[in-house]
Length: 125
Image 1 (spheres, rainbow, N blue to C red):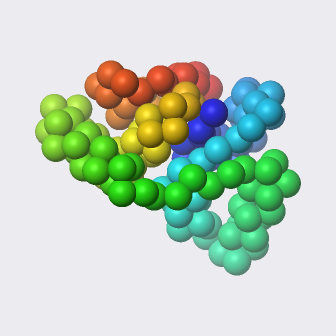
Image 2 (image 1 turned 45 degrees about the vertical axis):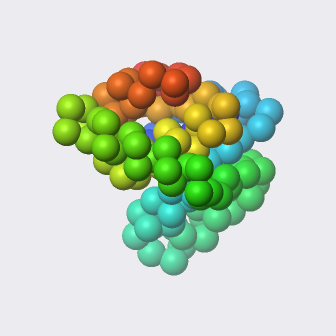
């Protein structure tokens, strides 16, 4: 399963339900976009190091941005940016999940529901 950035944020805020959904997965993945968002969101060096340690401790695999993912993300922005507010970051995350034929776990269904080929697991905090 691929986890959206918001799931990590819920865990950082102490949401046990989010931690359990992540913990029960045998294999954990995140898109390069989520990785970058997590590092960018760190407020200081300590949070930055904590994020890196968390990803390592839970054996997350970072899925790289490929040409196919970039193309698919561009299509999603072209098709859904105006009608559903799909932004570039979310398009890259969704495209990564679709290209790898994986389910995406996110609490932000609004940004992903328009993408029909995406298998979305909606997390409710």
